[in-house]
Length: 252
Image: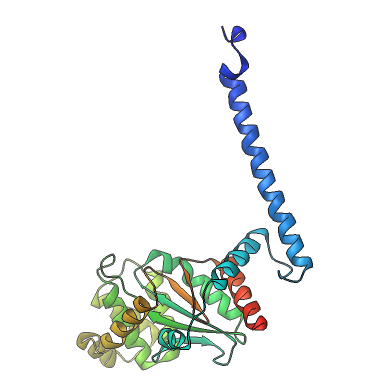
């Protein structure tokens, strides 16, 4: 019977002990981070008004940025070309995002990027470039060609086309691209000729080559003033990384 067995051999006390240890560890971790972040806030090294999660993002970004010293050549490489942009070209924080239009992580990040740029039209500059990973997404390069053809006609209508590509991730065919182009208000004859001739493919291939040279391996890949940050971000994450990049600009 369980009553005759040592407590550490009884399932319920043992489970209770394990749960207790997990709870104590979790509370200790949270308490440690709260104390650390409060100390950083008081010292002026951490912005006020951030959530605990954003503080973690901010601290992680600072650690990443401290290990990177991007050269002017690398910054010029990732920013090169005539690309879709948002924001202020004179902003001190310049963000380059390399995207694959067929990537679900890029799809999840796109609304956060748009929201972020609406919030920071003057103090951030976004440059969007292509990174179609055809080994994973067989139609990614075709989608990039279509998006670039939209951009070749109109910088403003490109963003309408961009949003439709992500809103309709399963719609990948010449007919689907034509329908999106029509809805975006593009000149259809010019658009279809551009897509059929793949006129924008050289710029896409150049972009792909540049991000590989800069160390990118997946999508989305971001560069904040030349410092690389990999992976999807929500609005809170993007805001925290931006603040870390802004702080670095002030310190330098």
